[in-house]
Length: 118
Image (cartoon, rainbow, N blue to C red; front, side):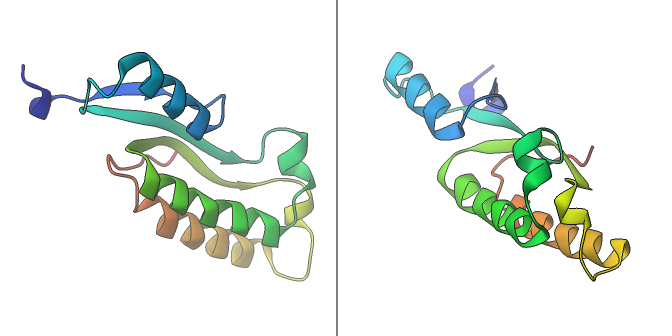
């Protein structure tokens, strides 16, 4: 099978993507062009995510858009769940989730190899 018929998917969901990409490039010296990174974007697991406000969570989702324009990737897992602090505030839960979901969808459309909702 030729390189234009297959893609090597590399897991990059436990480290910053730029570090994984740099390590990959260092090891392969650009030998492969049929590679994408497998990303899992969750905003609800772990202490750091649970301390973020809704505004901070939205900014993080928007940052993912920049990351996805820079690297070939598939967002193979993401959800609309928010961390603890982001659930506080004057908006109703449905309004928060609609806003958060729309922000994520806008970002993930930049994934070169698509996305999957978990």
